Length: 400
Ligand SMILES: [Zn+2]
Image 1 (cartoon, rainbow, N blue to C red):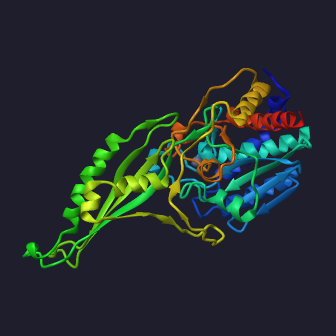
Image 2 (cartoon, rainbow, N blue to C red; image 1 turned 180 degrees about the vertical axis):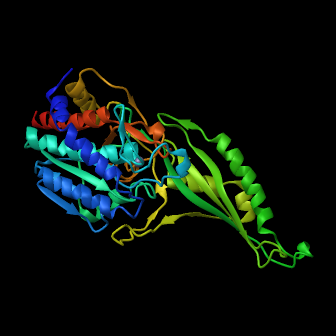
Image 3 (cartoon, rainbow, N blue to C red; image 1 turned 90 degrees about the horizontal axis):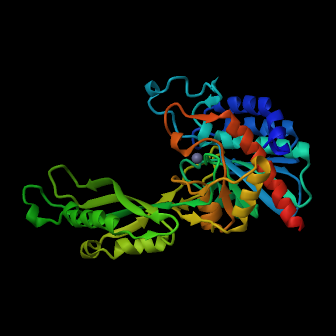
């Protein structure tokens, strides 16, 4: 089906692709997004967004329209590093095009979402933004390091609270409605150091940890599945200890836990479950949820706990229905509804802040954080069409 949304997006394809190549050619690790934010800001100004601002954290907010219902199309514009260069068939920042794919670090995770959402703005400018809607296109920062932090800032400090957030991370042209959450904890034991030649005089913190390690391995096997997200997990990602010398009994030991959270598992429940382990009680170990406090590219530090809640919109949520209707308007038919395996800014928008959120974005989750990352150019065009169709669909629903 060749809808006016798709044909409208197709007419913008040359500009969209050139813009996408530009932003792929600008490296943008977390906390180093300044130059790419500036490039996207220039594009928004060229397109004629009604208002373009960069907030104190360095998130770019482009607005079109001023209706009562606020839709935000969100794309984080930081990327992970390129890793082992020898595994890439071409320069990771080439922006090369071949056989309908655009190549480079960040193409699917997720500058494709950024380019398509900015061009959805261009398409809305052409088609006319409905009176019912304010459209924000947000290019956000630091997601790869601390998912959702940018949206905690936008809602709590900028004071922008959308009615719907569309996470434009890759969904293989499906509508996604949530994902598992995660958190980072440390468990610490304390001992009493003494000369290593007479360990019986001291208390070894590493031995106190040994039982805890065994209990955590068992705990992982005992975690119960919860619909719709399945089972959470826990694993030990690091262990370290302290002692006055390598010829002394260890006086401190700490393990780092990577906890993946399913439906219904919270920060409190996950901490309590560790505190309840017999070995943790016997060792009088302490449990700490870690904090993230790294300056953004503007130098602003906005500390938060490393707790990223799971979230899942109901299958029958109006937002999911609107997205499916928009898909039909743009392309005809229906698409699958599913969940991401990885985590997104939805941990904040839906998980912490309770804002209805759905996902639809170019590319595939499977190719992210890997060498030879690429995105289908047709996905960029289709996502541009989809976002415009979603704006119009929601405007109609609001007008009814
Ligand atoms: Zn991402």
